[in-house]
Length: 110
Image (cartoon, rainbow, N blue to C red):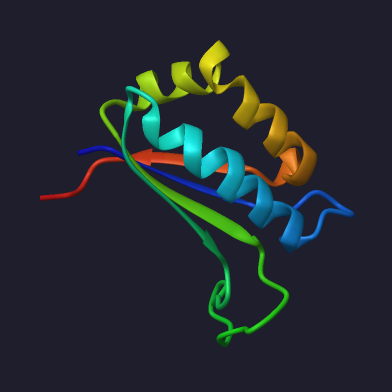
């Protein structure tokens, strides 16, 4: 099953409390119900290692990541551009930092 991994920071001035409210009230309600989505999980980054550095408990390159099982990456992209997903996109724009967004699609190596 294809997966989508999404990494991003919060928008300057947005708090993690504001993000959590958006995530619980909008994103985690709407996203799992989309036809292209099999499973949706969202995580607050608590630990990281960047490059060959040491583990960090703060100053992470991203603040949030999502793991999404999808039926097809292209269908997922269409979903993110659909009217049914507009409330998620609009809500995310209030708390998420667009320039930091990284979205990766992939399939398990077997």
